[in-house]
Amino acid sequence: MQIITTAREMQQVCRALKMSRTLGFVPTMGALHDGHLSLVERALAECDAVAASIFVNPTQFAPGEDYEIYPRSFEDDCAKLEAAGTTLLFAPSAEEMYPAGATTFVEVAGLGDRLDGASRPGHFRGVATVVAKLFHIVGPERAYFGQKDAAQVAVLRAMIRDLNFPVQLVACPIVRERDGLAMSSRNRNLSASDRGRALILHRALHAASKLLERGETRAEALRRAMLEVFASDAEVRVDYAAIVDPSTLLPIADTSEGALIAVAAWVGSTRLIDNIVIESLREDKLVLESHFMEETHV
Ligand code: PAF
Image 1 (cartoon, rainbow, N blue to C red):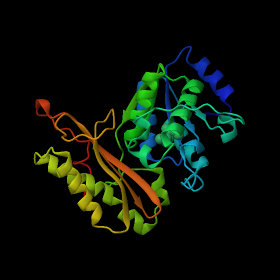
Image 2: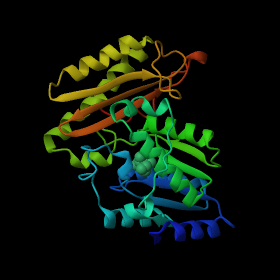
Image 3: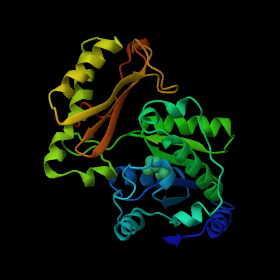
């Protein structure tokens, strides 16, 4: 695996590589877990070569958020990426990505202010900006993102469409721990007791999916069931429990035509997110996020 730290060299190496091979791209902020590695695996299955990036992007953190304490484990991440078969790793410094005087940002209006964008003002402006820059540097045919960040996926799909990026965004299923907790780099910041408490997000989604299985489609009923679960632990602070259209992220009243059921909560000082996607009930199809019911034990 070749490690590159400057945008100019990365651009040149990627351009040369793409003369003869298709290139998949897995952007990350490091602290890699099996969810990230599943993106690399999928990219390798679909492309001739895979570039990954590790960059803890300061512009997607608001002042007072967890930028300083975001987990960092560069050596360990490199070993994992190498073992997974990654071809190139782009690992720039903050100065390389945002040279003094850089003032251009990408804003996905509307979408960027919903769900996480509502509680983390400016977050998706930072995400869209850094991903647009990474796309220009790497120039991949396909880019792989985790479905756990469902709002991020919606925002980036809109950016790709609006700015005519010749990139196909591939959203990959959430990877969970054995007990159901969605894998996240931020899980490393949970204390032992908060690690147990964090399962509440999964339990809330499970409550909603149980109701769906019984034929309940009204968003308000599903939302109430999730909030009841959250109310069982006074030390967890809910940010949102939302039932929205997966593309527009706007609230919907009924899930029969498909829905994104998304939750965010503060567990101790760590903010966690999770979701399930419901496909349309038309043709009698109720599809929960893959393996959500089968592989987890609540
Ligand atoms: O999902 C992430 O890890 C980040 O938001 C991303 C896409 C790498 C941009 O910094």
